[in-house]
Amino acid sequence: MNILLQAYISGFRPEDFALVSDQAYAAQNGGRIVRALLEIAISRKWANVSAVLMGMSKAIEKRLWPFDHPLKQFDKLKAEVFYNLERFADDYAVSELAEMSAADLGELIRLNERHGAALRDAAKQFPTVHITSQLRPLGPDVLKIAVHVARRFNWSSNVHGSVEPFWLWVEDHTGEAILQLSHLIFRQSTETLDVDFVISIPSDKPPPSVTIRFVSDRWLGAEEEVSIPLDDLVMPTPTDSHSPRLDIPFLSL
Image (cartoon, rainbow, N blue to C red):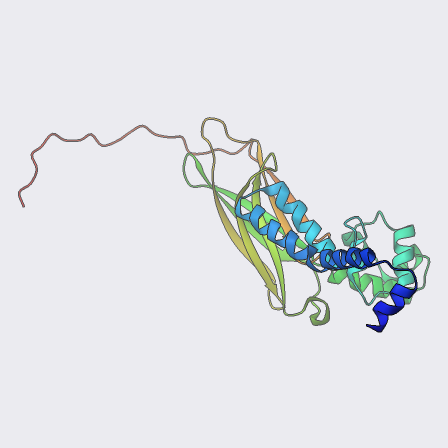
């Protein structure tokens, strides 16, 4: 009550309190609303909409802009490291920073080797994976995509907790529809995950490609996209052979 009285004395009008209340409501419930929209988009298999809403929900939860550097999600890095990182190395991908030495990183961001070591550790802990796939035709219009997901980041209980959830799906070449999807959970002991997707391929006009998309459920920028061309895919030819029906009487009971 004292805070409201002081605000009123300082020049706040009654309608201003309503505006502040509405802003607080939007800040507290914006993430929930976007998450609800995300669940609707995923249930309806909307690929582009799901990817956009997932980025929006993480940006609201992390209180970051989607164009911010992904390593700004590490609270242990100092403000001067963030400032120099965006000023001198904003165009470097996290995977490129993880491959550099502490001395090179310190020189890159115009700081010392100690800051470079902290930046390198953060880059190595940023969730990244390596995705490989194999195509296995099951019939003239059915294709099995065997996806192998290998972890490529160092696990830290302070950073990742006990689990790291991810979304993995196969979308069409236009990026509009999700053909198959799976929700994956990485744990500290998890090194690889294998997922099989079975999709339908039109025999008369097969698509030129499909896309495998890997998206973190928590981390901004932790995404991977692999395009799989289907131009050289050889599917089994459909056969018209069948067993003729014999004109014989029914057997008695």
